[in-house]
Length: 317
Image 1 (cartoon, rainbow, N blue to C red):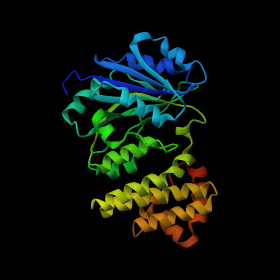
Image 2: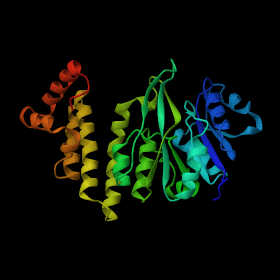
Image 3: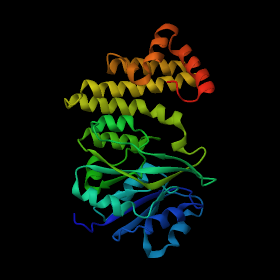
Image 4: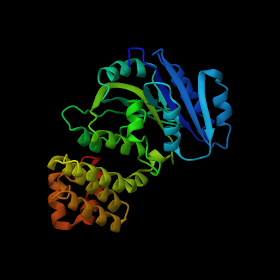
């Protein structure tokens, strides 16, 4: 790879007629000069494909049956001619300098993954919700991915050959596909290198897959247990990493309790206890709340925390 390596921006598209043009324009508007835009239409039933075609030969495109976002991204990677891959969801945007900033760093560390910060923006109003930043320095790559679950699809810049070697996105997952991919990359030895700049925008729509936190938590079990097992078989599972896996499951169990799904909460606590001797409790609870839990139980402590949060804000955990 050279300093002017071709970057393929891969955009999956399904019934996105009202916003796909903005995503494509943000891809074509990159200050980095050597870019191709690949749009994979995933069986849209609206006018999305017509919008894509309106860009003429500035965009390469493919249309096929509705197989889901993972299959569309994987198809885009197969079509891509670039050595580097930038994913972009059809409702999100790339900032103009994203590739100009990240490509040189990616070329310096081809075995690793560079990623940036991003702005979350309300889709309807366009108002900024918050800036998301996750620092990887000082953390084992697996621990980093486990703890920074908000590392979005568009944040990293990937080497195409490595994506193909990893099998790309897993097409059987209904959500949290990027979490699964990033975790598999970390388990394979890739480091995540932080670029502390806001370089893409996630536009949050009500009812979108990414906004449905319960669906994501439901998917965690499969993703986490398979990653844990792969590390165990490879002899790479440290006590600290095991505790991080258990902590995610215990934290998910707390969410189930708050949503009155007590059987699932119990199951996740049991799984966490199998992964680490303390069951992830020191990661899922602050010390005072963990002490209170030992007295009143897991369900009652959530009621207490919820009432305190209503009075004091998110200062109790």
